Length: 170
Image (cartoon, rainbow, N blue to C red; front, side, top):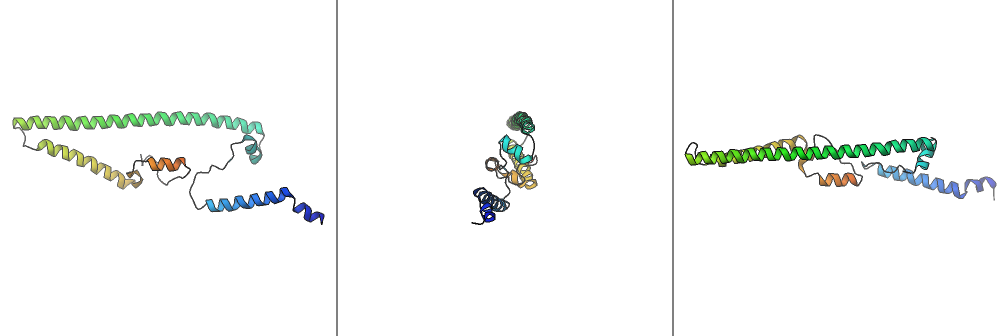
């Protein structure tokens, strides 16, 4: 056998060519979808080789990234808790206002100070007001119409839905 041909057909070069062509085909197919990129290896040794840096630098950078992930996790948890508290507080405040005002109107209806049905009309007006505000917010950002659970599930599966993770959507 010709030595040039034998060296070109070594097992390592054939495997390398197959792997690179497979990766290229896979990357081309995946470009059609908007997804998060989870293909970078978490192995510090492979990342050091890929980035052309000494392993010690990559280990130090990995440790910094590890610490920042924890800081970010705590920041997200605290902000989520604060948002939940704010939502609960606003809900209770608006509900107390609505029910207290309706009770006052019912008492005044009984005394004859206001017409019969004023409390009912007030409760209906408040409810319609809530619906109008919600409808306007959904018109402003249509992604905000649902509960957000499917969007979070798809994000956790690596599919980024457009406009789902914005302050406007919250």
